[in-house]
Amino acid sequence: MINVIALLGPLLGPGRWEIGNDGRINPAKRVLSPDKPFRSANLIKHGYDCSWEMDVLFEVVYRMKLVPIRCLSCYKVLLKPTTLADVYRIEAFQQAGDYPCKVGMEIRPTVKRPWGAYWYTNSIEEGRERFREIRDWAKHGLFDDWSILLKRGCTEYEQAVGPSDAWEQEAGQVAIEAAVHHGVNHEPLVADQPPSIVENLHEQWEKWEEIMKPYVTYHEKQEDIRRRKQMEERG
Image (cartoon, rainbow, N blue to C red; front, side, top):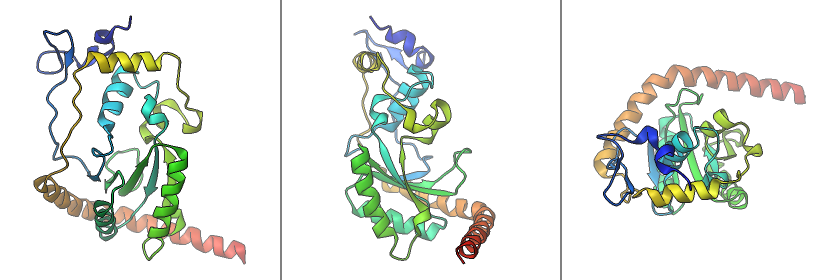
């Protein structure tokens, strides 16, 4: 029998996650955060609850040593805008569509770019199809090929576990995740970001653009140098 209390021990305590009278664990009340750096679209609609996989399963249950099962089949198209104007164009495109996606500030210290836009898929085949769609859209005056790629899972997993092409489902993971889901009264978020949070987010984006301007200018110059060298090498 899997000891769910032991697995989730770091989350348990007064004012945090608590064990109810039915013996199941009740997480702290989930609320919409005004501090998220991304504007999302259709993630909840398509059943994505990444904070559960990342914050609970990966960080607590697996102690950052295994990738959660659902995340093993997650492939994301990453588009790398360099200006806030492009971020707003991507935001409008994403909000008008039906794909699960997000765009916003890359505030993680391990990500060396100011902005990121992501489209989520559930398989390598779907990921490749979405990649072609987004690449074709992005070519119309927005980005070059170097600005877009298809990646598996989250960067945090690669940093902790290793290259994504080596990820495999381990024996016992199905039983562990089933036990955690059964033992926790988990309620996914059911609300999208309301206008008040979106307005606040846009203000944060404006401030972020000013902060990151020196970074973007430097890397644009480095990219120009790289391209000129490529042209010279090609003759």
